[in-house]
Image 1 (cartoon, rainbow, N blue to C red):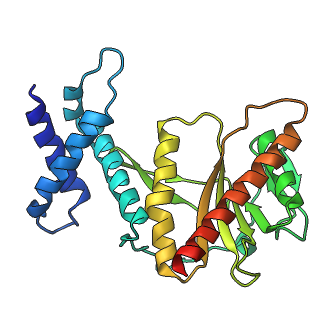
Image 2 (cartoon, rainbow, N blue to C red):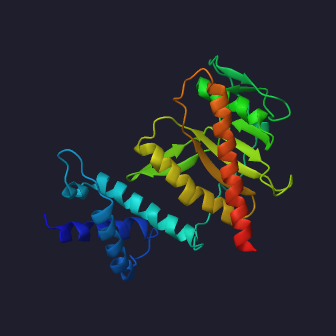
Length: 266
């Protein structure tokens, strides 16, 4: 197959699946711009390993995954330039969740007894020892005002794998004092992840390029950010101290980003 043929088909798929709302005509005037972007992606970012080859992108599942990655890159570029127009579509019947409504039964025995100063819930259900260490680090950190494990909380983020819709449930939500004062705390969504497969990349991209811009543009639910805690395979005897150090670095990184935004606005 000629590269130009593959380029045409992939651009056509991108235009019709990512740049067209339901019931409206395709924006054909975007075809030339999208074609240049797709060509750049094919030339510089497509890595075929083993016996795979570019023409396999004609399979719809692979084409949809490629289009999603290209759309994510376009969204990131728009966010970096301050041109994001993403809007949140709220659930009309249940737009806001609260820890006040958490009530469930479970057979899991791994639990963390949360401090009443940091969490509305007395017990948090743990999926691993790493999460328990993270809770310890969160309660010890001076800038963390409150936190909760996202278990039966109802907090889910939709994302795509190809054309198939999935729901992503992050691990924790923290409220952090990042210098804006107690009345304007940063809501920090945290994922504790060891091995980062392709699905983890899709989840992170959905948070950073769709969900966060949407909820922050709404300006009704405070400020939100996302962080991954990835160094969980360091199982030394000082693992707790390592978790604390990584947690400090994660919070400092968001403080630095917030300060940079304030300076840019000034």
